[in-house]
Image (cartoon, rainbow, N blue to C red; front, side, top):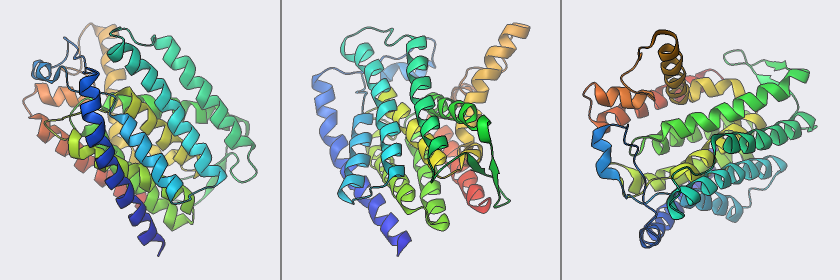
Length: 318
């Protein structure tokens, strides 16, 4: 019955997200909230200029409204919801400045990082001080827990900020971030049911369903992009779900695609500074595959498959 309830929540969020996105697209078009495409990006992406962005608003609304309507209330889901919306607001502010106010700079990098660290510290301190959550983390493949004690807060802050920015880096191809995050959401939903953490599982299922509903319009050729509004919210939601389930160490497994994307950027920057040469044709990694001749749809399919495989591995690691 628990799996059935989770599946119903996913389906509800899917339908609500599909409806919300279909209504949001013409509004964004009237506001001329079109995506700016970087000139240094792949040439094939220039035709995407002007595609409505900030579609992540629909993902946030569908997720939160579905959870609220299903009365999935607990200290954990409230905490996840706050993280989800708070990081989404950072992305919204950045998108609004860049797209609506036509200021290409958006929020400064230090401003975004300061806000992200502020939310991450608050979230980590709350989890560490909670009598029902605490500083334990579950160890993959063992079923055992490790108490990090005073190291938990800096560890958690690093994980949250890393996840948020890794999801943001992954959002570079039509349907890529939405599909990968849907898989990660299903992973945490299934894991939550298996571990008896039903409210956390419910939020994860709602988030996965909202991503799939958005994907109806975000798949290639995309009619709308989620923008930083969506990618930062999804990263914040995933990080908070992992934190409340003591499953931070499962993120590199279920979120393998995010890790690969982030590492490709770090390797590219470090390699160029040390040797003056680029390791990849372009970073993040999905652009490298495009530039070696793979079609965008094939790259996305490969990354989706990788996400599903590693999420399945994550279930085996419980």
